Length: 483
Ligand code: NAP
Image 1 (cartoon, protein in one colour):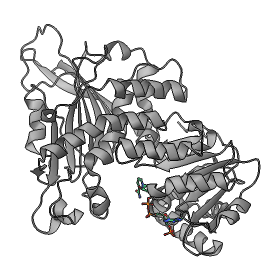
Image 2 (cartoon, protein in one colour):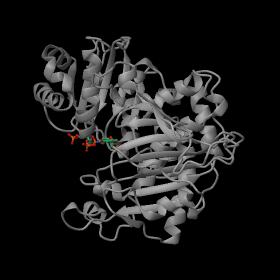
Image 3 (tube, rainbow, N blue to C red):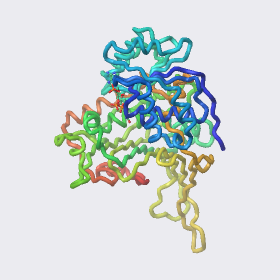
Image 4 (cartoon, protein in one colour):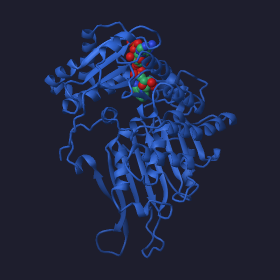
């Protein structure tokens, strides 16, 4: 099956931080892919900006080398690469000062959708939003796109929202959480709300518990200093895992519109019950020798920042009371693997002999490495010799089921095109971000007040022993982290 590409209208995209890591690795390659498949029109323009003094030719060369490195299709399709480079311009702008704003204003075309992508430090979000407004560059049809982190806590998130809303309307603000651009995450909505099979089972009567795991095999090397000020809770749970929890737990929206969907997500966050400190496990990887420990990678030998966190979360509403959600994320774990596992309750009365090691029915929604859905069923073990049970998986890898073995679309590609189309469904609303911080802040303050150090864990495993106990003590167990 070939996926349908619906072209977007021409636009001017201003990419602040055009020379930066994210722009070169993700945003420009994402735009190139959309261009190569015909979704981005030839007369769209990408105006990259940064402080570095550079002319257009030098920037084009930089972009060419980034695309050849990070966009596999660029090597195979040189004519598309050359045409795409024609759409790119470079304007030197000091986001914190006065230089370059008039030149930027002149580089933009009137009567065109304008999108301002802020791929820069969050400390520049407010100043850039203000200058775009002050210089008359922002129009009522403009959109502004910001990258996480959306604040460090509730107070800073409110300040950031106030800065953005002081210059743009909420319907113009696109807060990117790239997890929402993943096909499987979007499929969670299709699976739940376009089928009648699952919804009757999607509640505490039938679901024993939910496990959400985002495991990474890499450590914090290279981003140690930033990470040490953040930790797994701020870097992953407050945003990515919270989004996965919301999409799993939310009520069916009345319509598939941005605000109807986001209203339901906010209701889930507001229904989260306070978390007891005994339901949180924090860990830090410790390795001897060359591999290095978190302390080496963060450059902070005294650090108490967690590189792993596991939390039991209860949702206080009619659908989920009595069904805990277990969240787990960490660095330097066995594999890079993300999934949501919906684990169903056992049948009320079992007529067959007890099966050793039976885990029961589960739906596993895999986000990475290969996106897909697995259903774990209990069946009769084949052959004579009595009636024994065994468990099998009904496996649907999207690439196989949909015959899409081409390179999967990156989350950024999808999200940037949604910005151009003006569709905010997959972007976080300001109140959603604030509600997530209002939930996360007391947890973080709680462990800071307690002064506990994170539990050490070996790289290449599944986190600290205490995290296993979080489920074991309730007769449950985590799914193995597997590549
Ligand atoms: P980066 O590599 O440090 O790039 C920062 C960019 O900002 C550079 O192009 C830099 O160019 C420009 N810049 C800095 N100060 C400026 C100023 N005063 N005026 C104009 N331009 C300025 O950062 P990054 O890793 O790309 O991250 C960008 C944003 O994305 C950050 O908010 C980050 O938290 C977020 N993010 C990044 C990733 C990732 O994988 N990298 C993932 C998620 C979120 P000059 O030095 O030439 O000015």
